[in-house]
Length: 446
Ligand SMILES: Cc1ncc(COP(=O)(O)O)c(C=O)c1O
Image (cartoon, rainbow, N blue to C red; front, side):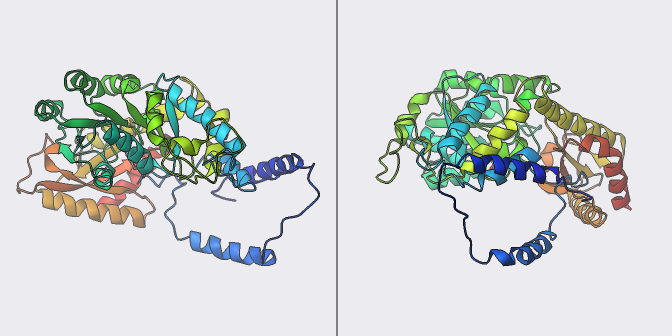
């Protein structure tokens, strides 16, 4: 195979034989499935359909926050499919529930938490929903605040939960503006402030230490949405402000971190953590169908979702066995490398008069715009370059940003927003591919 790793297929076959042997006490039986004899042709057709995709696995895909999982995660997930455990309850997924508890405890350890409440979720949205649902129960009817650069999910979730939501302006580096937060909080009635540790658009890290100081004065809850950025706490090359924010994350009331973003996992894997395990009481419910096989904690007892893929926990557990979440370890080196790639790419763009950059990347997202006299022209150019680059197999992303983010630019028109180019350099190979990425980007400019 030219592009895809395939040695893990052998490893899956060997592990499957081992798994099978674990059930040898049962009378022999081979599972039958209808139409199994036609699987080859359908799978070929499936592969044909899947060819219609951007090449997320390739370093020339430097667009959205997407890459395939680590081979061990893919293999462990596939292996678990021969069982298909359901982590709702120990009745549905005994081993995978235990693996989830262990893997989640390791993630909580990233923030210094030993006593906590936490579990995996279907993704970042579900994880944030639980955090805001808990905030809403503890501070009923009070307002949720997040910066205008926070993920749109917070406004939407607040709507679902029927909690009032307000947006706080961002500063010129895309971070929550604490002066604006302070004056809003002084008016009272704030239940929870969402601090984003790594905004989806630009990778900005909100000033969590200052937000926590304001919590002392105003008594709101602080929820850290580190869905994208959370694992960067392991990076060794963060700027001082981002470092301070990640170091303070353990003081937040709740944290969301997505293994399916920077944790090398397949989609369907978010994680929510609460500093105070007592909030578990808010989830209290009866399930007349499950929770019978053990008196130990069933994960459904502390999560809003009912059925959940036990395979997600299996994949995460296996990945953390191979690549523990240690400072200075191999997994941490990947985060450091991504930020280094972003810094290098940004520095090279900065040297080229064709581009303007709003700020130095805080994590591994780079945002830049073509030099132009008006925001309208810059926007047209961004789209043209995005399309031309894609035609040359360089896949970037676009982002619509307020012009105020470019403090060094005075556009001659009065437009408030400008379309920019955006790149997430989240693959280990990106650092080595930056010259080629720049080459193709230059080619897309002519
Ligand atoms: C900061 C942040 N929060 C929440 C989300 C939503 O997560 P999901 O897409 O996993 O539902 C994202 C997704 O990119 C994100 O970056």
